Amino acid sequence: MATPVFVYIDHYNGQAVGAAWEIVGAAHKAAEALGAGVTAVVIGQGVSALAEEAIQHGADEAFIVDDPQLKDYRPESFATALTKVLKDAGAQVVFLPTTARTRELAAMTAVDLETGVVPDLVGFEVKDGKVVGTRPIYAGKLMEKVVVAAGGPQIFLIRSRVFPKPEVQSGRKGAVTKVEAAVGAAKTEVLGYKATEAGVSLTDAAVIVSGGRGVSVNPKLTPPADLTDDHQKEVWRAQQGFALIRELATVLNAAVGASRAAVDAGYIPYANQVGQTGKVVSPDVYVAAGVSGAIQHLAGMRTSKTIVAINKDPEAPIFKVARFGIVGDLFEVLPALTRELKAKLGR
Amino acid sequence: MNIVVCVKQTPDTAATVTVENGKVSWGDAPLVINPWDEFAVEQALRTKEAHGGKVIALSVGPEAAREALKHALAMGCEEAILVSDPGLLAGDSLVISKALAAAIEKIGGVDLAFFGRQAVDSDTGVTPAQVARRLGWPALTLVAAVSAVDPAGKTISVDRALDEGRQQVKSPLPAVVSVTKEICEPRYPSFMGIRKASKATIPVWSAADIGLGAIPSAALSWPEVFAPPKIETKVEMIKGDSADALAANLAARLIEEKVL
Image (cartoon, rainbow over all chains, first blue to last red; front, top):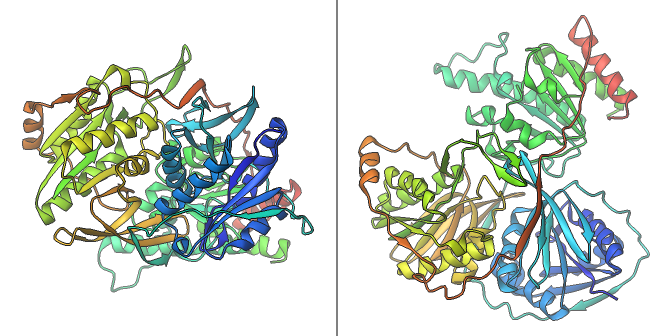
């Protein structure tokens, strides 16, 4: 039997990321083609529950490196642990979700193992016993197929929402093996965490409601008298506009996105930006309100399953990629849509 | 402080990129400094301006990559070095990280190596962490803010932009830092800077110069590049004579088509 496909379970302080289980499903698909099993790898402190969860999501077994030195995520010590597990097991194929952590973690592990690492897969096939990954390049203007030609493990990072999340099989059992890795004391010190504004994560969201520059142009609003600066007035107007976006997002359990124009104008933090220089998303539903649809925005969201565009300009390029369109005043349509969906969906 | 900033030359983001004879082509679009790297150059210059020292711009690439280095010089870097070798041209991140790490070691006494978060051509974003791993330095990737630099105590404190929020990390120097666009606004090259850059001599180091005996071959191979399949959408314009009617009709269609 071929060596199992290894899956790294990425977590934030012990909580598995949204895509973690999707990747277990993806690994199953590769494992079937290779005639192999699926082995989960969990690294951290007090994270044995994640190993059980991985098995319930379809892994056959799990390796776990549990060490007080691994309490806070740091790429150096996590990479040392991951390298140790993969090397000892003679791993040939390794899958990870694509997150801020795994990108650097996999990069370092690839150096340790002198092998290739490929992030941002949007698909793969297995050909002649090798995984052939497909990923966007040039911000999605082109796609490439890529294989790890070196003899070491083939390390692939798969994007969120490319594969469905497998069903939980609560009775499923598998061996959990503890691995000791001499990770040593980390050089860096984690001083703390600052959570961003609470809300649904953009990359994991099934529904996203986005606002563009158009959210700041409501003529019916009068900014407070103490705002004298024109830019301050504009930002104030935009914030009232984004409040309407948030209300719809709440009803749809959606994440809030924004165009670069809206971020650059200071309406909303960069963390919300969707596009070439922001986050790349692929939700089931993407509602774009007051977003013109510049190429750089489309690069980050055009693979969304259904795009709904609301814009007052019938010539806006966003309508070229949309499935449903409304030419109208977003300041009137959004609240009406929020009311309507709240009633119809019973939320 | 001795600061290195690593830059790559890439096609302009506005370029039309196509596949010709199985290869990527950007026609006659200009090659520029990777836009993410401009943020790295800016942050390197600000660190130098606050704490003294000098900034060396470093690139691995073909002879033409000089233009990216000249942009960094025009922004205010003191020196620039190009690592260029026919053997490195087909390199992937595993190879390029080896060359960059070797060049940084040859420069010697470097406290900080800045990078942009990723290059806009290959979009992988793995090189900064790989260079750090090869040097044995901490990697501080996706840094959105530098809260403190202590040149005497040899430490740096940063906020890293993880998907869930900010991780605040204090690291000893030397360290590798990759930056996001939140960190600063890159300056435009000054007229004097452009003049200085145009006259600057940029030393070229070969693979042998940086001590890479045999150049390792790339770990990756790329059997195919192709244009993404066109997504055919036909927009259905929702009709209605008021906002309420438009909203009701859209909601009805979204539910009918099981979109929601």
